[in-house]
Image (spheres, rainbow, N blue to C red):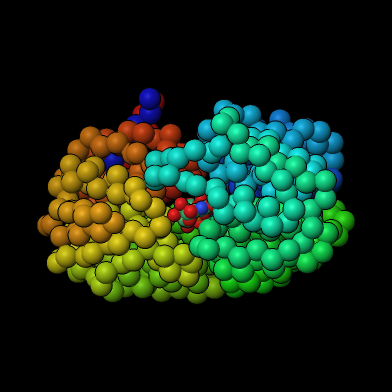
Length: 417
Ligand code: UD1
C-alpha cells in the first residue's frame, strides 16, 4: 500500500504544465473504436483509467501502442463487442464504450457499471438515448445486451445534461444513418474536445459547447490525430493547493476560460488571479476570507469535481463558506478526513458549511475517492506537521505524478511504497 507523506507549511512557487484531461481522453479513446483505421492521440495522460481504456481496446481486438503521452490505436481489425466484467468494475466510465461498440459492430455486451464512491450512478439516460437511435437493449440481471442492425438518426432529449449520456449519444449518432439532434446536451469542454476528435475522423457533428448537438451520421470515418485538452480539474487542484499553502504559481497547458468559476471563487477569497491565453497565475500571500455560497452545477457552473479541492483550500478562510453539492449524493466523504486535520465542517444533506480555522494540523487520512483524495493533499500542504494520505489508488486514477508536480513547486511530499 502506497501513501503520501506531506509536510505542510512551505509555500508553493513556480510554473507547471498541466497534463491532458482524463475526462477527455477516456471518451476519445472509446471513440477510436468507431473508425476502421489508425487514431493517434497526444497529451493522453498515463493514468490508471487510461490503462483500463487501453485494456478494453486491446480486448476488442485493437492494436494499441503507448509512448509517453501519445497513444496510437489501430481499430482496423476490431473483432469483439463485449467489455470484460473486471474492466467494467475497474472504471465506471467504461460505459462510454457502449455507444462506440454498438455503432461500429451493431452489437454490444457489458455488465452494469454499478454505483461508485460518489453514490448511485444510473445509466438510464445513456440507454434511452441509444434506444432513440433504434438500439434494442436487453437489461438482464447480469448485464446489458444491445443490438441494432442499423442505427437511425433521431431526436434525443436528455432530462439532465449528463456528460456520459451526451458522449454515448454522440458516438452512436456518428454511426447512425441520418441526422440526430441531442437536446439539453452537456456543455463541458470535454464534450467539445470529443466533437473535435470526431471531426478529425471525418464525422459531421456540430453544436458541442451549446445545449444542442447535431450529428449527420453515416459518413465513412478514417484515421486521425488529436491533442487532448489540458485537465481543468487537475489545474483547479493545483490552484486549491496554492490557496491552502500560499505562494505564487503559474499553470500552463490549460484553457483559463475552463476555470473561470473556480478562479472567481478564489479571487473572491482574496487570491490574486491573472490569466491569459494559455496560462493561469495564482498568488496567495495574505489570509483568505469566506466566499458566497458555492453550488455545484453542470458546466459552465461550478464543477462538482472541484468541490472537494476548493473546500480544502478554504478550510482556513475567515468566516463561513457554504457548499451545496447538487450533482452527486455522496460527495462529502473527504469532510471527515478534513475534520481529522482540524477543519470545522458541518454537513447537512447536500450542504456543507465550512467555518474557517486558524490552521489545519497533520493527521493520518484516507482518500475515499479521486477528487476527495486530491483535496486531502491540498489541505496537507497548508497544514502544520506531516500528514499521511492513504488510498492513493483513487488519486492515481486522475492525477499523473501528482507528488512530482507538487515537488517541482517546492512542496515536501513523498510517495512511500
Ligand atoms: C462525468 C465525469 C465526472 C464528473 C461528472 C459531472 C467523466 C469520465 N466523468 O461523469 O468526473 O464528476 O461528469 O460533471 O467524464 N445521471 C442519471 N442517469 C444517467 C446518467 C447520469 O441520473 O443515465 C445523473 C448522475 O447520477 C448525476 C448526474 O446525472 O447525478 C450527472 O452525471 P453525469 O454528467 O452523467 O456524470 P458522468 O458522465 O458519470
